Length: 554
Image (tube, rainbow, N blue to C red; front, top):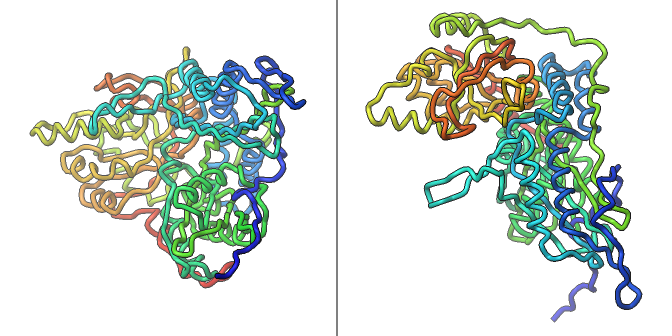
């Protein structure tokens, strides 16, 4: 029998030195005590974990990393960026400036709270770490203007909102973070449904592992992400993995920049590494999609991370994940010197240009007019036309659509409000005192695709407003019934609440909370024609793969 290789160990993901800039949250609740053998132990009180978590969830709902804001400004300054790229980037910067006021969160979908912690062997707690962290999540979501999105399964078919945004996803590991036995390090994330739903796993084979096939594969799969998760994206692609779930988790961590300091070359220790050449090639690939920052251009992605992992010889998982324009994550640490949280940007106004962008042509649409007149006006313009909407909108999304469909099944008519008004797919965050609305950005349109043909046949949903691309069945229905799908910018929910939404009232199903049917009054609400009454779909062309021959050459 042949002898195996000599023992050699490396972490699967050697993350390198921590270069984060931190701010001190508190120096209370931590102490250093002497232990056996002259060892020193860091003690951490549950209250310190709770305070850190609450502070982290606040910060990531309102602030962004300086590097992310600089990338948005870079789009504005790039002469190769399309007017739509620059318009979206400018709106996202304005949104960041409003959110940084600490009242309106940057996105209405304030996400599932995800916390990963790594506790060194010389860190002592009372053993209730997960509960203390969950309490911090609870405090943040119940005290701030955030949205409750978690549904408790009461039976296999019945669910109810928990009213607290709990449970959180909390994962705690026993390991010395960065080789520090007396440190407790964390990654805090808030993951909304839009970007979470754009996590993909593909089970491939060795045949994928050549430059030509890889680029063909990525050209096809990355286009499928579309815009419903609110680009520009931080894109992560992971090739390989000791299991499918490890590949997916690595992709999520990479999209959060948590793995930026991985090695950039492989070795026989079989650790993961970043492939910088492939990252550059994939970024250039996405530049040529034509999708851009939601409505055409170059900036589908801010940047790309490609991580190569070891794999079983019979498996080759490929995982893809994105972090969206609400790039919500922060790292933290507890050390003998105190409780520390990543310093995010509290003054995003410094990234705004000194002069406003030259506005591209915009068509004003009066939503107070009869639906037939609104449709006739929209019919004059091609897809990608930029609009400014003023007047009433009906707001309805998943559960409301299901309830309306049940009425139709029972032989009841389409509600008149769905006939008379454009329907906005959205669900608001909590309304702060003195505001007409909480953060109120668009929901992913594709979740309502299955209802469109039936609703339009009954005279409803003739003009729809949401984010992201739609299926062909929606395009066909709009052509058959004379309908339109308008794309709203995904991301600037705080700006829409402050600048565009003037009044909000519940029309029906108040028991559904944010899933109720609402009527809102908007002013200068930005949108684009994405699908028209002639069967044209802006996204149909840009989501069609092109031939790709090799990395960096087509």
